[in-house]
Image 1 (cartoon, rainbow, N blue to C red):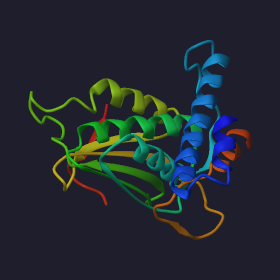
Image 2 (image 1 turned 180 degrees about the horizontal axis):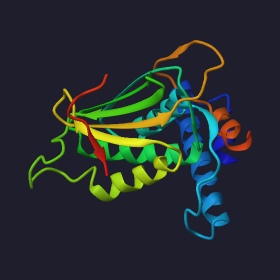
Image 3 (image 1 turned 60 degrees about the horizontal axis):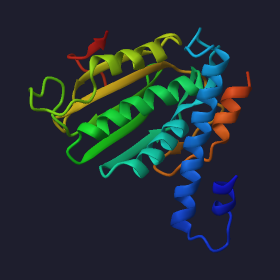
Image 4 (image 1 turned 90 degrees about the horizontal axis):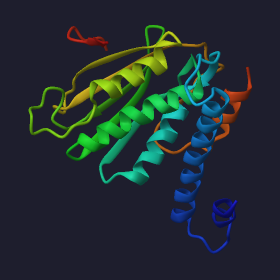
Length: 214
């Protein structure tokens, strides 16, 4: 309530207000996650039923929140993309991948959302040491972290692919079953106001060296 009051105060600058609103968005996601864990008795329990979800907008919000927490440059591009997925599970999966990418990146992380051959692809590239970058490379996308991400999306028909990207670091792609879109459109940059979370929760380039995980 205090953060909401500050965000609407007339003497708060636009930049500060935007940061507060992004923090409130992060808090909403965490609140829904905690409520779900409590309902499941402290574990993940069974996967909830999938809902029709606007993936590019959810990804834009995750990126906006991460920009507050990292000194790395985090880019985002996305076209309108709908998937059949659980909103909290996808938020956790993308937050995990993006957090690890920002920790190992030298200076830049790029996130891209697109529809490819009937599936929604969320792609995260970084300019870090990549997989197998040597013993001195900072630890990031460890097998445990990728295993968690795989478990979060595979229950909804999703899959995980990893490779080396053009920047020299890791590329992680989450592929989700696409759902029909209501209409056309595109999204690039910006932030998400949190309405997608409530709606999703309460309404009912191919490469030859992809390595699926696990």
